[in-house]
Image (cartoon, rainbow, N blue to C red; front, top):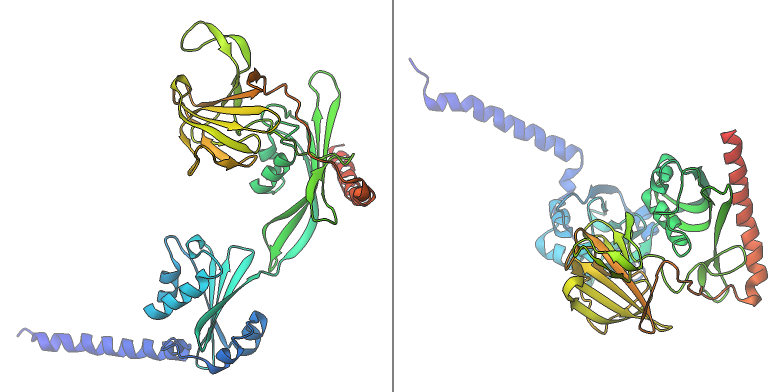
Length: 432
């Protein structure tokens, strides 16, 4: 005789009921029963007039639940999955928006939910590695305060020699791309690492590294840098030095050993390029027209979409499609200079005629519009309306260290220079 359906279901129902009871007891035992309603906490309300994160977190917190933004997460999704209702999520988001753009919270950012006195006392949102926002309840709702994360700062020295290129050489030393970019930018007015660096060139630097709870999170100031370029075929070398100095008036800049500013009025190149595919010439064989024509600019071969920078501060005086030049931007600068950027794939967002641009501000992106055989930037420079070769122009530097601060600069430079010198001696000893 076949068993009835009700008899077959009873054992399963009993097993499910026993499982729910067991799991419920476990959850209560581990304290998750506290994730119920989120009542106002009187002690937090009393302290809301003076938000001090350390006191709140040390003295009043009894339980902390951590969470982290995952791919596709928003502030709303993170708070909702931690038990907050829609109204409270809205209020917390509004409080948080008063001190940061919540749309910029990204994957990996951390959230801490602190419990005490029977409910939530505060929420801490770690915004990147360097800042955090404290949210606490008060009698007028949620309030926020943005503070810097306590970081350990270590000043260290790094040195090496080029094997292939600067990026790979820095990476082999355990450094990240951000340091390589900062190092190259310091010397970008005087040295082109894309075309002038050679195997065996030496580099050394003194940089501040930032640590959070013992974990490296980024770089601070690049205090000093030195690059030794071997001159091809001559056996000689060129030494480039840079020292970060802030004078008592608050101005900070990089200077060479003589106190001259490394920053020039114009960048050496308006794009991070792979190679110069064509130089300035009054008689170049045109790759499309197949006849000799003037090419009064410099062609920088680069991947399509590579950002193009304004070589100096100025005002956009022309923007649009210009026949064989394709998408073109023209910027008027001081001292009678005008720069042109041809064959762009697209313009920077919001760039219009009359827009003021800063040096190294993105104005467009490398393309192959107009008469072009491949993606590249045709860069042109005119002075008082006459084309000039960008590669041979000598641009004036920025102001030097003021005379009244020169002694202070020399003292600080000497300390940094000693570090660079010690670093180089250690490197040469290792090589031997």
